Length: 166
Length: 419
Ligand SMILES: Cc1cc2nc3c(=O)[nH]c(=O)nc-3n(C[C@H](O)[C@H](O)[C@H](O)COP(=O)(O)O)c2cc1C
Ligand code: SF4
Ligand code: FES
Image 1 (tube, rainbow over the protein chains, first blue to last red):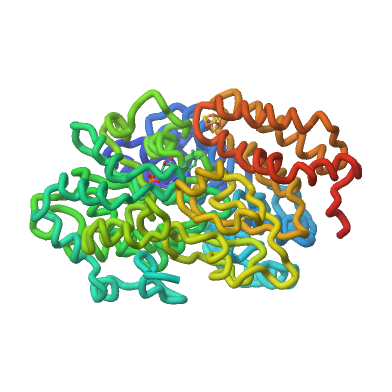
Image 2: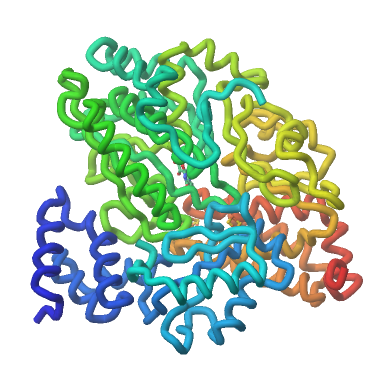
């Protein structure tokens, strides 16, 4: 039995029905479910499978493949820290370690206030602003500890819809 | 800097609008082509222009199009996955002039009689995905996209496909699997041009390749060839320069511009930095020492040096950067991104990475050097071009910087630590 709100259920079913090939919607559906549940939970995998007429295993194969689909609980803001070679070159005192220490988390963990998750990520395509990170779709470059503190403070303060990269 | 074709009228802080693009000849090529020239004519012009794919492999675009199969519907996939480390030209291009990109896509679709395009874009470019979505609405409104384009019998529409990450999705056949909701492994069993997306004829092109098409049609293949500085080159190229330079960024310069002139355009080396090495075209190319500063940045001249132009993403390393450490970073990346489908890549890359890790930590031995060579060469037996790409920086390190590896071994530590 679906645990999705009926409106969302209908909306997603329509989205699938409107596609030339239902399966081409699988990533879009996963993004919506991930936003709804906060991450791609077991329940979300089952829901996606039911909507797309796939087996849960087929969905799982994709959910575990992509790095912007989170198969474990994440914070409200997922911080993708670039570990590409250009950013690496500029890491005097790594941005990644600084963030983890500051937020009291390890890679993939959720900060105590439920706000943040830090993940290492492939080159983000923002190398002209190295070192860089991406938070819910927004780039931040030329990072240093002071800048990072200010960004975290701003995110804590300002209301922002749960985006999880979309 | 030379003539600007792709980044013409670049604004520092915003994309050009449809009106602005039209003021400099935008969509004229489309109006002159649709219903007036045959797709075959377009294919011939692009072939004659010498345009080679900008996605990394440099395959002639017109030639690829000539292989298009007979079936319908046909698909065009503009590739904006851009996950090659160091590469950000497609992001800049889309942001400078989305309508140039769109016109290029529509013209190319006409040339191969495609009915549908799938704009494949990586998740970190969400803002750019939204920009393209908005602007393709504007183009549709203006009659450049959709049913019966400009009143002709040519219909073509474009949708944005948002990816969810992973480097291998940039590889054409893996990309097709990704769009079909399958696990994105490469597939070499079929020809994309005959049986690609949903089993139909499909062309995958990099967006920079497609964005060259409007100007080629408007100004002619000879003009396009004449833009290049190398003997058999054609067009301009978006070079993205990053690392230890004064003004990292994306610069449009003639194909075949020597490396040192591109470095100058990027403001030269940062204060206190001296050039030690550069990767000419992304992480899948090989390190080059300063003696190659004069090399012409084009497919053939770089091939002659045993290297590749790749994506034209130039990463500049200085004398204080450990190249064993840099190669280790690259192999961390490749090991993580390997799709795991074939054994040489899935098993070989962690092995290479481990040797580099031990070298960097001062646990290296002399015999690691031949082992690295042997393992790197095994990568050429892998299923797709990912693994040979991963081997490239390792081979460059071995070839040009063996002395630095040896220092790691003899000093039992990274010689750059604590510097
Ligand atoms: C591992 C791997 C990743 C690739 N990533 C990209 C990419 O992000 N963008 C791209 O245009 N081409 C990429 N390519 C090249 C594509 O397979 C394909 O050759 C290209 O998109 C064709 O376009 P072109 O002929 O216009 O260059 C990649 C290839 C490999 C092997
Ligand atoms: S070479 Fe690597 S990326 Fe390519 S198919 Fe084999 S495992 Fe996958
Ligand atoms: S290496 Fe960090 S954004 Fe490219």
